[in-house]
Length: 416
Image (cartoon, rainbow, N blue to C red; front, side, top):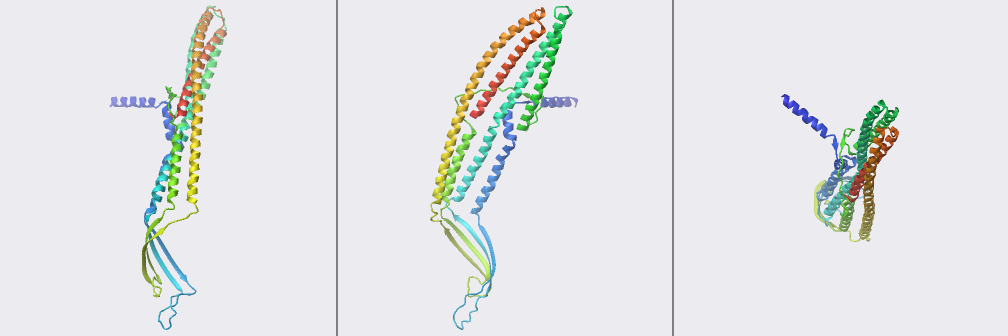
């Protein structure tokens, strides 16, 4: 039993640790799933099912109940003397139940269902477009957090180096090799590092809180943000959801045109009416009677003053507008990709220079380290060189994160 408890504790600890890490792709998936706007995808689908059910009711029998009671100032009389035909009552009553069954309407129901289906695709794709636009915001937050993490690691390395140097300087002061106040300079620099660390931690907390709210997942300062390996393919085609949205809009227009074309088609219905009233169908029988009528009826709007034609012409113009929107989107996106590609190349060149600068700084610091040990330079001069190296290393880290961010944004712009 004890072994079971130990194993359970180990698994629980492992699970807890595993939950403290997150990747960029996970953030993408979480924002697409948990962002409030994402709920509209299922809501639109539920709404579409209801709309389709309403449309299909037109194929079902339509039942109407009518009842009326009237009083007439005059009634029909048979102008035949001594006919013994009782004239109708001035007060008359009638109740009828009519059933209409659609037989043919030119495919109007199917065309309406097809249009609703395309409208659903358009609405859901618009939600995907809006969610896709959040990815660049995710990128900015995620890589900002990575930058803070890397900057904090550099600060810790600088602190460790200064603490080791402080120990050496105190030893040098003891034996009169180093100036007495040199340790105070190093201690002051260590205090500055503590301040910078606190500031970085505060910035990281703000960034994590914002990202956590965006993806609706609990994150904290102990969460490990894994550095992604971003690869870019410069010669691939666009795969943005906006392109699918434009296509769905054009399909919606075509289905609207098909629906409009069927609106003037002849409609054939069968009907049956049963009733009870006084008088009934026999107007000469002045009593309450039951009656019924069955038949078919045709309804055809033969001439609509070209309203149908003009509606379709208007939709054709709308389709042309969507084509211009697609062309504009492709142009602007390709321009943005070219700018981002040039930015990536520029950062890569800067990183190469950063590495050369850091190698030179390390050589200078190594010399300053030896000079400080021998009392040739002051601790302030050594700190200056150490700070220069730290700032250049921090700049390198910043440029590397910027390069990853630029590549991630390039992929988002391209739709990968």
